[in-house]
Image (tube, rainbow, N blue to C red; front, top):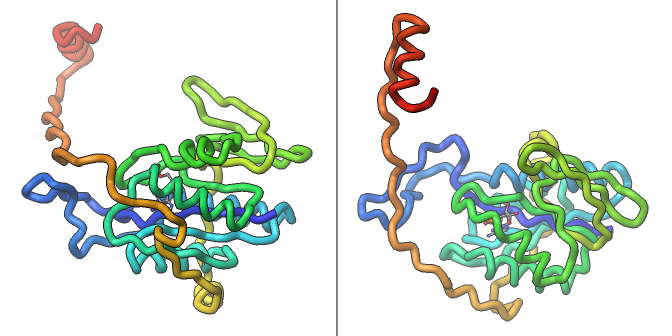
Length: 248
Ligand code: AMP
């Protein structure tokens, strides 16, 4: 089985994001960019499946600017086998990403696509679900455990108030939740080896996909500043304040 893993280049999760003064978006100048953390979990899960003998090849795909190739190299250094870079300088919305991924799936015929549950830059949480719909494949979103079961997978999903385990037939779409695994760091020899792994250079036109945006961002604003806290002398004072605030 071949596993396709879409990986997105996003602002590093440690960076304190700044909104541009004209509120048109966030400032990306001189900001550290990295692989989306949920995509790292997706790459790790694919590698573990390969290590268990459940997959033969892992293909990492990224749609984005030239630097997205570095994100693919990170996946290759972790253990993916080859990459596909689809060049796009402006941000690409989830529907267009899903359409490009559908075309890649048609070409590559993977048995499984593992995506992050969401990209931490725009938090849309949509691409995996849209891809499943476009392909007509079963989807297991927010996976916290993936196990092979017969011809399919048993996937445990984190849902409100507990865990749900579902069975999906392959081929399928899985999206990763935070607790699925802890991604490995790439070792230096593997980083060197990754430099020789192939990355195909493609464009959205190669897949016949129009990436023109369908959404218009009206405004991006900082969240309201948190109010300062208050220290209380004793429990009675705390209870009185909570009563006054209508909490008790
Ligand atoms: P989103 O739906 O934008 O929150 O993203 C969910 C997942 O879709 C990400 O974790 C990636 O696996 C995949 N994805 C989204 N955008 C891209 C992109 N430009 N290139 C590759 N994968 C992407």
